[in-house]
Amino acid sequence: MAIFIPDLNLEYFAVPKNACTTIKHAIFELENQRQFENYKRCGKTIDIHKVYPSRPFSASIVQPSSSPQSSTTSFGVYRDPIKRFLSAYSNRV
Image 1 (tube, one colour):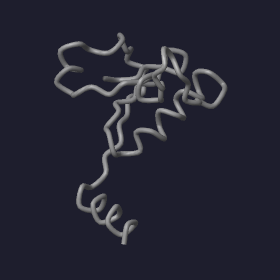
Image 2: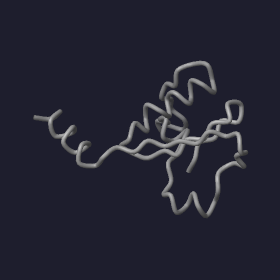
Image 3: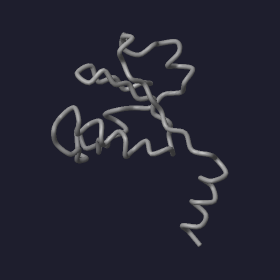
Image 4: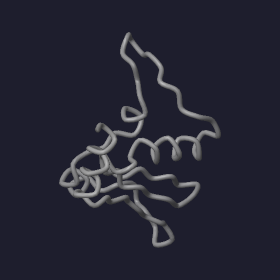
């Protein structure tokens, strides 16, 4: 699902394991002028992924995001899967 910030005309398509958490934190700061901190609601911890959930792309296609205009900047981040695997492996060894 896309995250849409109307004030900035910015739309982000979250892709897990591709700087998703970092970008969601930055978007939260842009919208709220403060850093996000996990909190508890009804005994459950609410993290940034509960605030901005990611959904499969097929669900995003069926339910389009907020009505973006032609002046909206849309983006997503893609990492080469081989480089990502090697990076994760080299961090652990």
